[in-house]
Image 1: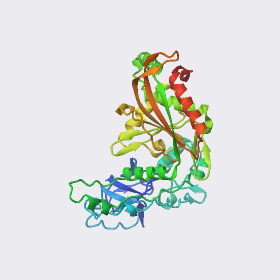
Image 2: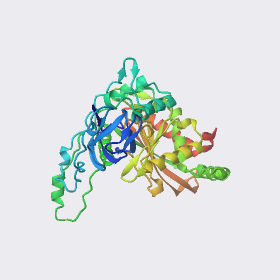
Image 3: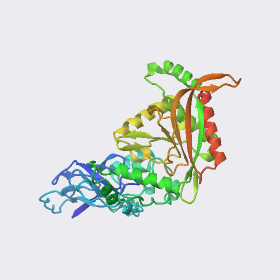
Image 4: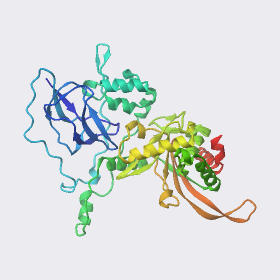
Length: 429
């Protein structure tokens, strides 16, 4: 009997992906846990493992094919004793790029469809069906397989299901599932815009999965989240002096602290000091988080990631620095697992290294707030005694979701962040 291998959903937001590379060919014998292919999602390149044993019968989707919908049959595996289907005369070509196709009107772009119904966990009698690799990963992370939803054939639990679950408590998931689906794109149609510029030279660039998701989520954020903005200037001279002293002391350990490391720590501690602001919007309720899980925006080619540092309030500056460097490095090569860039209640976007003085960041749903950080620059300041001095000043803007955090609460949170950064020794206590 031939078993159909379907394009998997490797992340909660994935609707389609690119079949980057086949690691098997027709006629190869595979067993459960073997890696079949590499698949590019909207955020990462991930390995796709076999969940059944048998012989690869037919490769139905060629390497490099983009826009393969979740649930599409990409290959077949013939179980032992079955007859393998003859391979196709020619693998189906990749869909033509958008530049060669007639452009679809942007105004008619489909809204993000609701996620496909979850497949129940496959069971055989009282036994939960899961791949060996998924079982091992679940055991290492202390996860109960019975609490997971399988995305493999017949609901089998595979590696991606365990990685997507992370270490989060299952009880927190139902409310998050009620988040409002993204609205359809608005504005002039592609045909209208193309006609407007038909006499001018241009290069048409097709949207990849990451750029489509970014466009969708940011449109959703600006249309559905009632943003308000709070701005403060922060004097950094004390922090810069402490950073220089600390870096000299830990230089032999190969650690070099950045200003961003202090900002992460300051925000994490502020969220603990103002716990009502450590919250996310979950459709019809607010979830107050116990720990400070802080997301940090990282620019990558074609978009950005927001990897999340868990329990940031409990980690030393050197630990935060090392973890952030690792996450940023793997983000740039799209090697982050879904659980490493999903979640969190608060985000930081720092454009100071690009010389930007100040800006307003868009909230990343379901977060309650995001801190936009500008460059630290020398400015004239008025001292407490009325004299004029010079200080290094950094401007920040806190974008806040008014459904989650009211004005006074947001101001209290920002005040706590400022105090931590202007009195950095308190963060080491």
